[in-house]
Image (cartoon, rainbow, N blue to C red):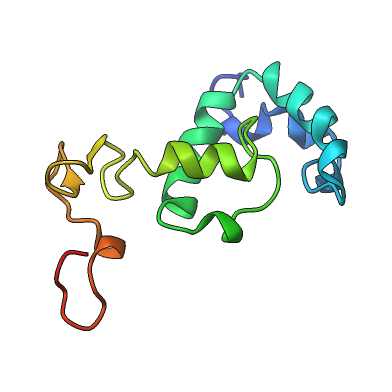
Length: 116
């Protein structure tokens, strides 16, 4: 099996180290993970993979370093991406995805369904 035929995560640099590198106890200890991700050949695929998993979560529910991004950075970027189709959101005007018109359910009142 060639390197390109293998799943992207098998080519990821993080596969060569333990998970503790990406979930440091102190914020200052994340430099090693960020450095490793910066040079990873599958950083784009890693980011695309985390979109359906993390889109719509609050920043407090995001942990660790993924795709070379801190939880704060991922939250900022994912607030601009539709979890349904991965297209850009048009949050200012319609509060839905500009690509598939998928309404952001987390922007709706859970009791009435009305836009917040």
